[in-house]
Image 1 (tube, one colour):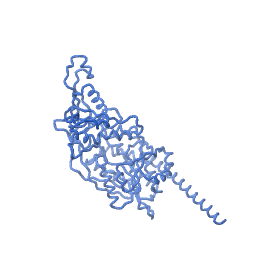
Image 2 (tube, helix red, strand yellow):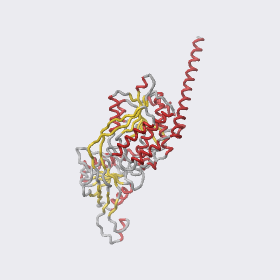
Image 3 (cartoon, one colour):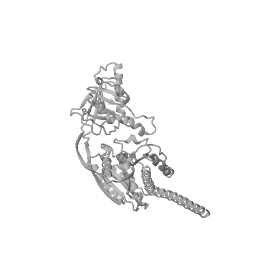
Image 4 (cartoon, helix red, strand yellow):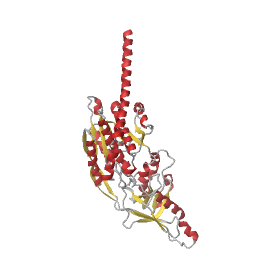
Length: 478
């Protein structure tokens, strides 16, 4: 008994020592990763190259293809063990020349002061406003589209609308994002339905066109584009986003003069699909165990909308992904699992890159235990959202204490990134880095999404956060 007791004490002491040693090593690794990111980080430098030499990168464009070659080189420069291209067929929608729009008031007798006062500055009968065609929209007729306007201030009211109220008119969806919502992504979801589904909803009741309030909390003259949908069994009608100031003006004038008309010109066109690529890099595991057959994939989407430079959406996430690889390699980390880093193509108007990656992973029988995405802007990271099992949540609780000293504290949100969502059906746990959200939708999908809106320190902190989560899952699994 005495010998057995001594053995148990010694065994327990060794186990505790090993456990404590492991924790010390993890803390030291976090310090190394953070120091490498903050002192030698390349995210900001690489983002400047992407934004200022290539610019926006809508799928099918020459810029998107140049971005494929550029990021392949960046992965090689970051010392990836291997880099390969994964073919993807993508949509090819083009905007054409700049859209124009104006609000036209009915002719009035403005000789009386009372009548003149209704229209801001007396005798003004037309108001120009800024619009952008929504991605995937058809063009207006060559002579433009003009019609009277029906305003919908809240999507909850749509079910009360009758066909005779809408038929032959332009529907103006004017539901703003809810400014009372603390995390702006929670405000985005309820408002974005009018952009994605508005053309179908309006056309079903016989509308001839759609105007959608830009999905942003900013009050300015910058319209925000984004994807919209059609239903092949319902007429396709031109759909545009109007700036928030333009939306407020249109709403105010409608209240004063319901008989006004809206006229707009759009020149967009959908061309045949073209071939493009995901860019995939690997850090291979050298461990002779089953864990090396498990994959952890991290990525961002390389495509962007055709306005601005796609800096926050999602140039930032792409450069952080490349940097996470570089950081792990630079500190000498040898992964226990195989690590993949992906520039996904076509998140904005199709998700075909994410779907193709998941399809090939299944075909090759690759066991992806985790998918991580950065697609919420290059602001300072607050934490991670995730969709995992209850058992995995318990495992993750042992990870988060290492992140808190580095400013990451929010691990209570559910959700994963769009490009990794197709992996969920294969049992993959999905994560998305959650940066501070207050400014993101000021820049999202508009001309303002440019390199100068990104802060270097915040961007590099995000790259560290990705590298740190990859390290923990690689070391300990889920």
